[in-house]
Image 1: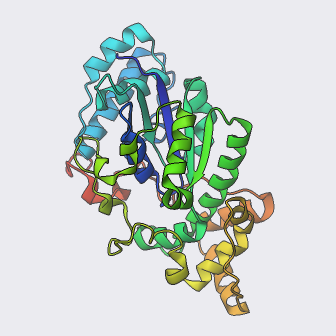
Image 2 (image 1 turned 180 degrees about the vertical axis):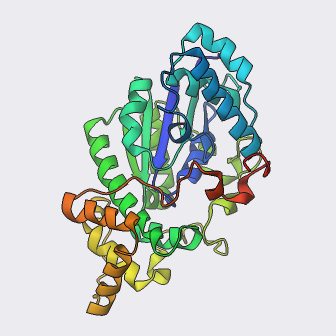
Image 3 (image 1 turned 60 degrees about the vertical axis):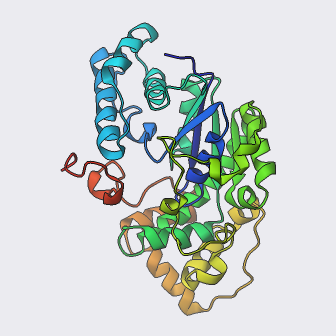
Length: 340
């Protein structure tokens, strides 16, 4: 296996710009990152114990190969990975690195990473796997997250509101960990990335200990896993918008008033942490009552509401199990018969 100088984990809550940021970082001549594909912590980590058993290790690689090939058309050779693993030792770190190197075989790319949503609590485990690794958390205005996720999710009824509790947890966890371990964990916001792009990207390059390159600022240089131009339309909720800054503060024009009430009530402290102001709107009793009704409308939301109201913490949880093929977007599955 060609040497990987540094492993990166980029994580976020839903609808907060990790796909975009991964393309920006991957425009650097030394870096390649997967996005919304590998998801090693979701599908692999701690699911094949004891991973030191060669049979379990091979099963992990084989399962990733099947899913990556049939869902995304990305080829992973199990036999090649197993040949290399025999000399490296069987571990989750080895498995993740071998898969990444299969996706990106170009040896000039010596900084490899994965963009995976809702795994910020796994950052300490990632850094145990890779003591010289780097983790990045990107957060976004919870009001825009809720507004965007409501539009695209297939989650039933009001379960889209789990995104609010995820946003709370990502901001709390990401800011704390970046303060405790600044050399290993970097925190930024989608808003700053969009409005102060060069400054933010230079900061990320400094954090990753790589040179800033001008092509990182030009969307024409952003590519997908196959080296083709990246189609950012696939990552948008509001595809009709053409202004690149339209996603910043979109909630002001589009958010449901009940959702706004809930978000500013429950995420007030988190908005302050990322230097965002409240709307200044007041909400009458009927808006509040409807908000509470939404928060108690399912076991998913009741649990999340309890955690925030009583324990003072957010949640890291999808509304639907993301490991089940029935919850995947069928438009994003290359071989639709492979997971029946």
